[in-house]
Image 1 (cartoon, rainbow, N blue to C red):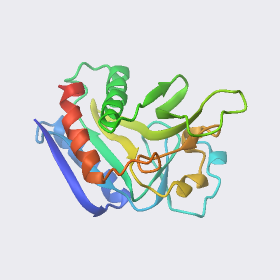
Image 2 (image 1 turned 90 degrees about the vertical axis):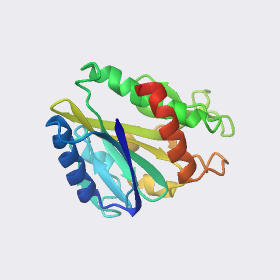
Image 3 (image 1 turned 180 degrees about the vertical axis):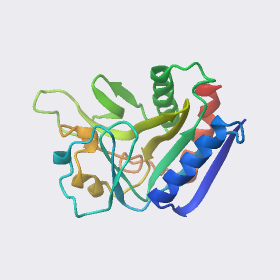
Length: 215
C-alpha cells in the first residue's frame, strides 16, 4: 500500500527534506509503507547536482537550497503542487530510467485529465506543452513552455524528491533562474493556459492516475 499524505499551508524545504529522508530510511528498513507526499513550499530555489552557478540569475531574490536530487535549478512556491515520491524502486524492477519514465507518464496522464497534452523533449528534462497561442520561435517552430519538473534521488533503492506541477504559481518567480538550465523556452501553468483548475483538482487527478502507471 502507498500512503497518501497532504500537508496544508506551506512546508519549509529543510523540514521536507528531513521528513523525506526519515521516511525513505524507514521504508528501506521495512518499518513504513511507501508514500506520496503532496505539499507546497514558500518561494525558494533549489540547486540540483548539475546546477551551474551562472543559471542563478537573481541570487538574492529567494532562499537557495542545495539539493542532492538530480538536475539543475528549479523554483518551488505557492500555487505549485509538489509531489514527493518515497517508493521502493528496488521492489519495482531496479530500473531507474524506467522509474523516471513512469514519473513522466504520471505527469502526462494527470495533465490529460484537464485536456492538456504534456509532451517530452529529447535533451530537455520535464514535461512541456506546445503554445499555439504564442508566436513562432525564431526557427519557425511552435513555442513550447515547461509545465512540470522532475528530479529524484535514490538511497538504498528508495526514491525521494519527485515531481512538481505548475497549477497557479507566480510565473515571474521563475525569472530568477534559468529553469533546469534551459533558457530558450518559457514556463506555464494550468491557470496560465486558461484552465480554472484548483490544487484539489490536481490532487485528485494525481491519485487517480497513479495506479494506472505504478500499479
